[in-house]
Length: 399
Image (cartoon, rainbow, N blue to C red; front, side, top):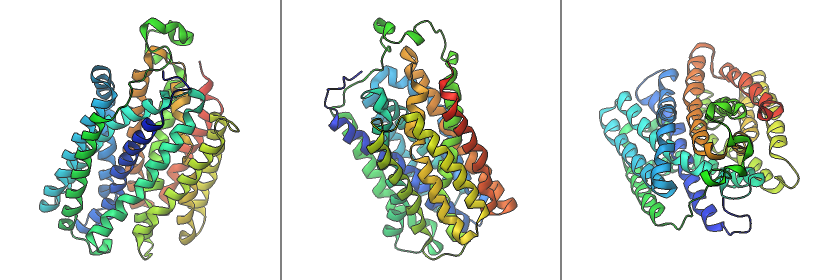
């Protein structure tokens, strides 16, 4: 593990760029969902399959990503992820030409594959880059980079295309995606050249297993209950955070609000506010587990306000649950990965697989929207946040 006194400012900066690209790639979905629904005349349930397909790759490639990291290291795995991203973005161009939902789903799956490999590297990397007690602080910094990129994607697409989303044709997306392909290929080259140190968690070296006595005599990753409960918490969290970030444009469109793409910005502002609080308060004034408790309570209240207030008002409470999500990811990762020792990379792969919640929850949300309306569909958030509250109170302590 890198010692506390070491200077890891440059690695933080470069990994911040990686987190921005993750958010940008996912933020594209918030533009594609209403675009495909309008251009292909499909249902909400079908349009949300774009998000589901993106996140389904985490289930399939989460474990292979950890194996690749073990074999070639963090830097080369990052470069591989950008190559896969570029292929996925290229596939959007023939998808637009043929106006095929199936091809859009294939393209989204490849983007999800690239995201899986990148997430599998940057999340454990930033967690073990410095002292574990300040991991949530570092991840909060990364979160700002990540969440500012979510609204940047639809705003970038809208700026390059130069049309209201209701007037956009599928062929209009080809030019911005050519730009995106070039940028991601350049980032892949930079990942190979960047002077990033290879890092290891406490007890990860076979010769230093005594540094982590809890994991020293374990024989399987399934013997860590706090990790398994954390995987479920992360599964639900990614699903509901995706709703907070990816549904506001669709919600604003359904309400007939002008410039609906602008509403992608407000949840990200909420997240950034929360991340700034995490940077300032953790760990000096606020423990990671305490931050998780506060955010879980706020998320439960915010979810109830979304479904119980008038629609024109409720859309603003989506930003409240986004604010609540801000410190969940930074707290869940270090709490779930604590004391894993030599099982750290395998534990990280399980957490990456749990990101598939971003496929399941939004798909259920889209089906609920078709059945009971968009506002009532947000009821799905309540039980998810209640479980996260359980993990913050009890689950992370299970040994």
